[in-house]
Image 1: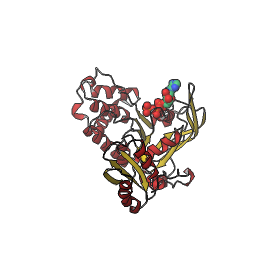
Image 2 (image 1 turned 90 degrees about the vertical axis):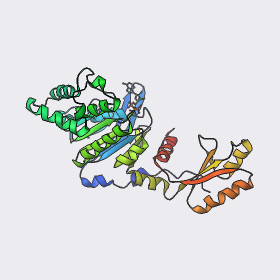
Image 3 (image 1 turned 60 degrees about the horizontal axis):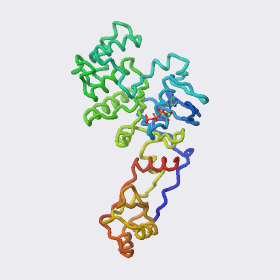
Image 4 (image 1 turned 45 degrees about the horizontal axis):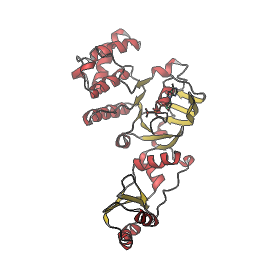
Length: 330
Ligand SMILES: Nc1ncnc2c1ncn2[C@@H]1O[C@H](COP(=O)(O)OP(=O)(O)OP(=O)(O)O)[C@@H](O)[C@H]1O
């Protein structure tokens, strides 16, 4: 039984993502360092984004995901390193900022105005020509499917619809790069699926999307590539399938569920058999490359007098990647 988690991959051996073959990056961060107060938030972070891809940024609270977005919108300058968006410096040049839309984590709308009124005001503030405002507002509402609520006050909308309206505001300028900070936090399944449809539609039209999320299913199902921020850097980056293959190869997780909580003697025996504890005291796990070690485990446990309730093999998933990366960083 192989208990050890496989060695961390060497980042330089990462294959070029499929999106990279589409052309040069539309946005790049190169060796970026950012310090906020006493904290070194980003420490040599590099990342390239490509046209027409959805990139999901993962990482624990406070690892710098919002900070990275603020760099791309020019709200923040790095203390060292380079940030390029559509060839310009977003902290100095207006052109890259005009091509970038940001959907902040909090709802940034006037609660006492209707959806349509909010979007009209925002379109004016974004400097869109007056005659174009009605069509841009209508277009943005269609994209996020909020037309049927356009006459409702923001205050009267559900959380999911508020989020849709928040996103519509960022789409008024037809950004080529759309940044969304936790767009589906706290929304129901329908609103989440509606948002995913919108983002896929934007991708088909060539828009690049960078979103942060703590929802691993969302990252797996929606993103062309993911990046995991840890210790101020991109600890892992690429399509989910590639990362899983690189990190785990053909290993599967063996999950043994015991019939009762083990005492210290039983715990020692489990560890000798190569099993490691989990948050659930009844569940013990190990990594296995073949069925042999898996199928011999029940008999081995019996020899130690350990009652097994269930044993199963689990495909590695993003939760394993995160645990590995964050375990290595802590
Ligand atoms: N103005 C500031 N001054 C000092 N520290 C700050 C400031 N803004 C952010 N930080 C700190 O920088 C770190 C990164 O913050 P950031 O908001 O980028 O994290 P995040 O990954 O987006 O977190 P979350 O998942 O919770 O949204 C955090 O530890 C935060 O407390």
